[in-house]
Image (cartoon, rainbow, N blue to C red; front, side):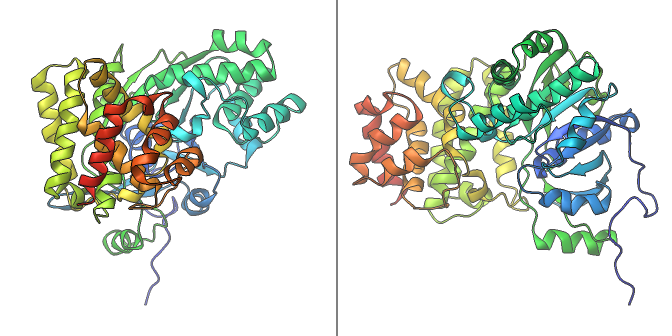
Length: 460
């Protein structure tokens, strides 16, 4: 019996690796289903290879490097799966490969740095400023002061290290493009990088202002984690072993705003939208899709569900999602027909039982996600004098989650909230938990009462 070959560029009909002109930080399933996929589909893809770096764990580099960066995208439609070989990753590195990273940044041909490091990776403090008191930030600043080529761990420090190398090489301008679920992610990234640069080398601030374009984007594609079954199906259907295929849904959206002084792929010809203002698209997606995802992650898992399609099939969960959407829609400032169509499309996506998006995966990092997914709607409704029961339902689910009900807590920033949530009876701890999300939120007695009531309703 002939062994199934490992996927690599040595197999017939595989694309050649393009020259690296993009570096990506945080390679994972979402990046590979989204930005790498759009780059693969750009008509000038042969000119735009990506060198991708992992997060702190080297797993993706270990899986993808033997495959020369190739992987299979498995698009799960209602009627069945389709398979596509994606070749835009020209190289995949572990995060620890600092010399390789700095080498790319020092190359004048490099035009763009993108990242998907999750909300937690932005090491933000108050008001989207750098939390310079964090031990990991302090360690990175000290390391770069001593040696600008030192290995660092935080995203802002990695970007500063790269900019120091680029300036030293005289390599010219470039764009830094955030692809994380943060409002105004380009502006946030600019603030964090500028503030960390000032701590390391004040002169880098002016150079950055003159040479670096901080672009903004809104990203959308539901992308579950890879399973053993996914690998087996790819081997059976494609005739090769892929250690890290990517399952995803048919829908995708990418909205981008930036100057791109060193150029970019023709992403718009692959379906992306290049606009002057990302904000309306950003709010719609963060509040409606991400906001309801977080609600379902906590509320659905408390009620015994494990995936989005299971949770949305629960009539109570569906009603709470619709309630939250009504509250969000009232404050979006977008045409009613457009928002109604978007909501209907979301329900269709959520009900696709072939995209098994795990609630436990979505529940991660709630302390970072809820301030941008849930609190804008909640604050707008309270300012209008209304009790946002839909938003309160999300918070109630999160409090229960912190108390050990439903999805496990995987959130490095949740320590204070988790301590508060477990300090007594639920009705007594809600104010302290809410205060960890936003100062004095727990002083709103009517909101606290709504959260307590919804916690009881969720568990009925």
